Amino acid sequence: MKIRKANVVDERTTTNVYIYENKKEEYIVIAIPDLEWSFLICYEEETDTLKERLFSSLTKVLTKEHVEPFVNKLLYWVREM
Image 1 (cartoon, helix red, strand yellow):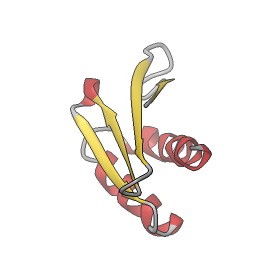
Image 2 (cartoon, one colour):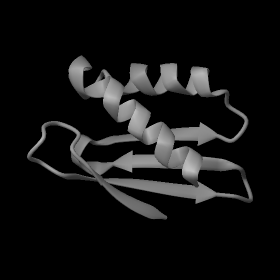
Image 3 (cartoon, helix red, strand yellow):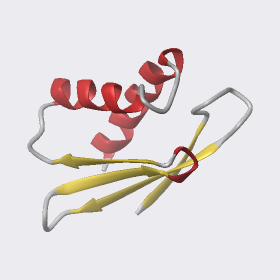
Image 4 (cartoon, one colour):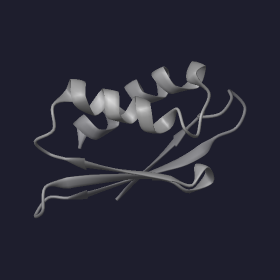
């Protein structure tokens, strides 16, 4: 499991982002306890589809102005694993 720090809600507050990878079953779980949010990603999922799903899911817990840069950051972290 990797733990990343991100400014999710505003520029001053840092939030822990937990990223767990299960190589045997080929999936990744992202969890942000401060937002009460988690997300499951399958290895075979296309990047464009994944980006749309992340955007849709995060708009339920964040303002739209914060979602797009954060989605790009999440995609970068997931792909580096």
